[in-house]
Image (cartoon, rainbow, N blue to C red):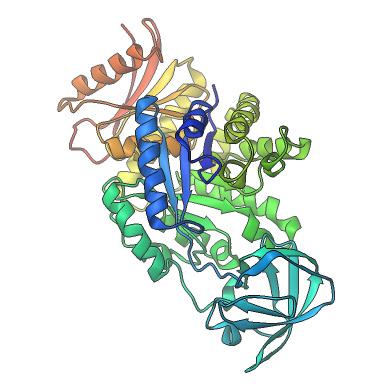
Length: 475
């Protein structure tokens, strides 16, 4: 069974009901909706359609809304764009009317104030780069160091420590509002640099509000990672912008370190950017892409994300199926025992709350039992999803079955590694909740009579901690 979750970005190539049904059936666990390129109204339509089709398919599919953040773009290069040759000099000026090979207008009013001589700017996906040679009231002079074709309205990456803008932007907050009203369960914040910026989103903590995913894509975010982790519900390793902010040879090491630090604290982690990029047009991935995906799984990532591959690619459902096959094969070779010991070694002794520290201790005990006994499954009964996420970080070999009465938590747990989640009915007593979870798991074929399972739950339904671990023989 595949345990690493798959996030697929929904765009023009995958937004039709026919293609979306196929993408859902192919194994998409979470649908990503980006506000960077489409209107709120169009993205809301996609949101409602995904909800409808996932219910028809009887599949739990989470929906992740990705806020653009302080994304800076060049004014449009008309037609087929222009080719910027190495050593070409051009002028950058604030503006939105249009760009040419001689003058590139940038939709950022503080451009002349934030840039300094020697700064490196990356255009689009980073293939085109230039260095600032002069800054004056007339504009920014820059020399192309790596040339290439620029078309449309490419992004302009300015070093994050230079930006006057903070994340989330006022526009982010405005765009988020209708999705909060619609009940969106996962929200990603772009270009965060500190925990305080994450808290500026101002949403209620989950499950009453969405699970907030902080995208680690700036140097400041790496330096302030612990504070960002404490303010977030999940983390995304956005390797594209990290590869601009850091030397490219450092990105794989950063990926491993970020994943381990976040998983140790019980946060799901997403690995993103260029995972199957060749499949935008090709029917098969490269060997390097397959290895990249497998290595992300071995690093301990909770989920892998597809971007342009499913948003504008030629065969979105085929890409998801390919990703599913590669991750399932890597999952089967994952060294769960070594991983569990690693997490145990770096386990928090400074859990921020009593609730968290008790849950940490119980889930660690459950992992030890699961590694020594042949358990058929671990059943985690949780109101907020905290117990399930805490259990998932140990990557136990047996299945993790999550049970919650909150439909919002059901969708939030679609992001968690190895978790199959069920919505249970409200039961006051401990024994009733355990019996209900076992009955649901048997009905869905996840466990059978004679199996021995571990059950994690709070002694009372009103308890805010998971304080009981039992081994139960299924009857």
